[in-house]
Length: 102
Image (cartoon, rainbow, N blue to C red):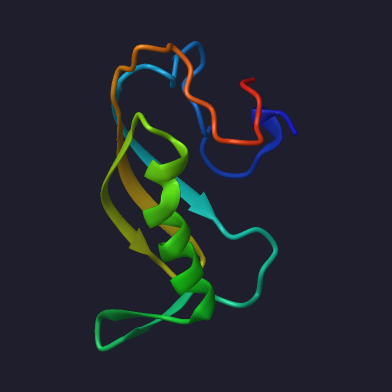
């Protein structure tokens, strides 16, 4: 689906090279799921099983991407906000096992 047909904000700045070393603020939303990732109780986030799996996957990301450092992250009922940092590597492209670069 083209960016112009997506609801909400554009997800990327046209022409920006997101493989460059920098801090990035990312948001991802659950797609088509009616089961939330957590509940908000007394202004606190309480993760359910799905939210715990997202947190576990988040913590595992640096094992897949050697140039990725995790900063802050918050899980909301239907989306996640995160701050990550990419650092320069000897290789210009870092790819997770089983994937190929775009």
